[in-house]
Length: 241
Image (cartoon, helix red, strand yellow):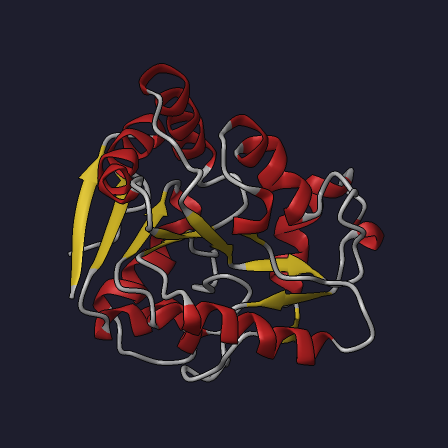
């Protein structure tokens, strides 16, 4: 079941997302985290809450959705670097509890299976998601099977173009593969929180919520999950009936 919360703009979306996330910021909880520009406002609020209210992450565990393949973790655009820069280095989470898939090594598929096993052993209490303009969640591009586990994937041309802005607008620098939690892995989370803002997400949001459940829009599978909260600003909600 998808619960839709409509807000005015990105700032209000970030405020509302923090309200949804806050009850899970307690010892023993497992957070599913995401990268990209969408969650930055939420992460800023989590940091502020940690600094001002002393909310501790020492006994909280996290699993990130994805990582670029072949990008060293010290690269500023690796998702490992992104998470440390925007969240982990500003709160008291233990390094060994903050999991990001590895995009390095000889056997990425083997590592992906181990990542799934870790998540199975520590089920995610709330999974944070954004949505791509083509309806992808994590790096599960259109056509990805709904029962997929964590895997290596080729990035769609549209995704590579969308990410170009993070790589000096030089498409040759953008990784073409990633390691990503599969849709089946994501659907195991007990709760899902998806944030979508901006007019470029409007069609994807409509397809996710009102369209058929179809691999053409990977996010449409969320219609089958029991506890999904979608926060959309006016622009992203503009095509919803």
